[in-house]
Amino acid sequence: MSESMERILAAVVEGKHSEIEQWVRDALSEGIEAHRIIDEALITAMDEVGRRFADHRIYVPEMLVSAMTMKKGLEILKPILKGQGTRSQGVILMGTVKGDLHDIGKNLVIMMLEGAGFQVVDLGVDMGVEQVIQKVEEIRPHILGLSALLTTTMPEMGKVIEALKDKGLRDGIKVMVGGAPVDRSFAEKIGADGYGKDASEAVQLARSLVGGE
Ligand code: B1M
Image (cartoon, rainbow, N blue to C red; front, top):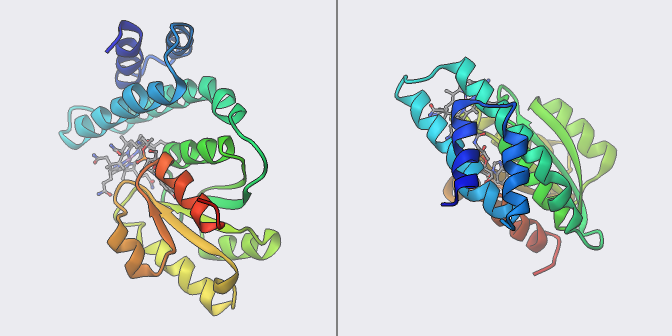
């Protein structure tokens, strides 16, 4: 790994939020592609943060500073990812489910979807079933994307799908789910139309759900 990528990784792990923007710009000026900076440095760093948290080597405040640092890094890359978009592919409503405040993964998926030409409406985090249903009725998106990072909040995805059925909205919308604890079998179990392991898979899935590739 190049020195600038090492620095980005270390900045996120150590929460050096005042330095990250410069390190990301340095990596870009060396010709390193945005998606490599995300996959090999930023996401790798968050995995390490997660391991340190699980091992009680760091606590929530440190995890928050790392998250803030990662977000600052992503902000630099956002215009580049967005700039890759072409014609409109469809409308996607995206949110993190009730009880869950994790939004870095969701935001990254949104950036990649926008880069691929989708129009994305971001519902934010901690979205209750009623709020999701109300927004679906209001904007009638092609796809509803749900993200969850906690095993305790995953069941909320199934509740949203059940509520869509109850309201007679299920046939008019595709539902895709994702987030670290979610997998394909869980997606099938709750009746989602698809599961994306990461942001790239989410883009491929969204394209196939709207009848593309
Ligand atoms: Co939290 N946290 N956290 N946390 N946090 C995890 C998830 C955890 C695994 C850490 C650990 O123990 N190792 C653990 C969950 C354990 C479990 O449920 N089994 C955990 C915990 C326990 C908690 C708290 C309960 C801690 C506490 O308070 N005691 C608390 C819960 C708060 C709440 O939500 N109610 C909490 C809080 C926080 C912070 C606020 C400090 C912060 C979040 C800040 C923010 O998001 N704004 C935080 C962070 C940063 C993490 C870790 C370290 C990193 C998450 C992340 O951003 N990853 C995380 C450990 C880990 O995941 N390694 C952890 C990077 C991101 C790019 O990946 O989100 O997985 P990810 O998204 C990926 C894919 O999953 C996928 O694409 C993305 C890009 O590749 N994807 C989709 C995501 N959504 C998708 C949707 C799709 C398709 C793909 O279609 C719709």
